[in-house]
Image (cartoon, rainbow, N blue to C red; front, side, top):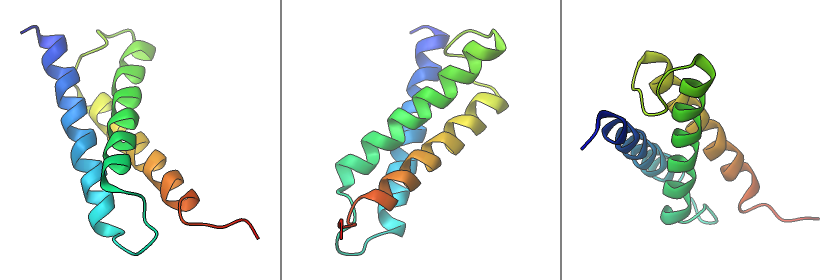
Length: 91
């Protein structure tokens, strides 16, 4: 397994943890389902981690402090947006 693939898998695992943590912290009725929060966490972590590496000119799967931090931040931002939208009704 190449290092790039290993680091992309690390971003996916971070996203799964973020999504699961978001679901545990917001376990009220009307909260998004676990699968949805995990998928959004993974997407955010992948976009954040790979995206910052491309911006910085690193290998897309490079795991460093910036890529991991941005992966977590973007994952939380997307999960926050999801939490704000799901369960609200248009009046």
